[in-house]
Image (cartoon, rainbow, N blue to C red):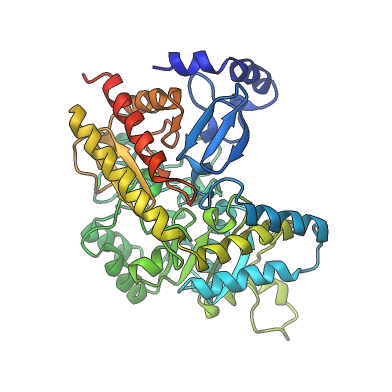
Length: 450
Ligand code: PMP
């Protein structure tokens, strides 16, 4: 199934050889690699990306989430250019970053105080430390199958096998990949998303040691797992009772599921929140925030103490609040707040994802399409999808084949990994959705049905 894409991408193929001599897998980040080789993008514009062979792709991958206004939104681009002409990095604070944080605070229900970072990884790492500092406890619980960033604490029980994870009612904590100390894994506790009974048993058992639960409101890190039966309401109540900080990892959902993120959409307020991706409209903006009394762990009100710098949870970073990224983020948030972006991307998201289910049904392929608003995933199975373990029923090879067929026809339904997800963006049109559905139908027909 890679043949047609390969035929169109000979420049990328030779460039991949050159790239592989300078960087592992020939890519800047592991998830950009796929068989037989990735295509290299030279230009982006609106709903499209163009590779170095001159092929245009209708883009639903959208940089794994950040591109919410379309590529190169003219006003964001203008804000970036203006900022480049005004100031570059300083190690003194700049108003543009403060204004960005004001907008985040105004829009996000749980955020009273906020700090900036450059990636979701940094945001979750710092949020976890602050929660540990606040509670004086060491462990952090997270759902199995969830990706919360690339630091050692987050790379636990993500993409693990049944054998490694053990019993569903009490999963093992399993490091993802090598190079992660056992001592770090031992500070993490795995919980099963959507299983209230098991979650409660595990959290009560470790309550005296658990500082925080870090969880995605919708688990897009394994496709699209939606919360069921009041799972988040239950978790909100339970964490409050047990003195555990509830951190919603809104790196994927933040400013994507609505101006108030998933927490605004669901009407549930966590104690802390991480965000990145859509907040920067394509520039490296991230951050974490929450209740003022928790965020004060960073700067305790004990200024008179000589040990001030030792008595607070450290947060720092040379590039935090970079003015150019902050300017892009500020303009993006203004547009998200003031225009009909969510109405548009959610309507097209409903059309795209329900349409994908319909065309797969017409073709007679067992497919389960899950989505919420502008975000969703196609699972190659007719099994129900409520837990991470349910996703193991989906046929990842068939998904990759389907993706390759569609990519060869110039449509990117995310990337070829079954555990990812894809999106609609503000520049997508009804005609583009119609076209995508035609391509998807042909691709569903083209894959092996056995
Ligand atoms: N948390 C979640 C829920 C994510 O989806 C991601 C990235 N896909 C991260 C954290 C890490 O963000 P980043 O890639 O910006 O480090």
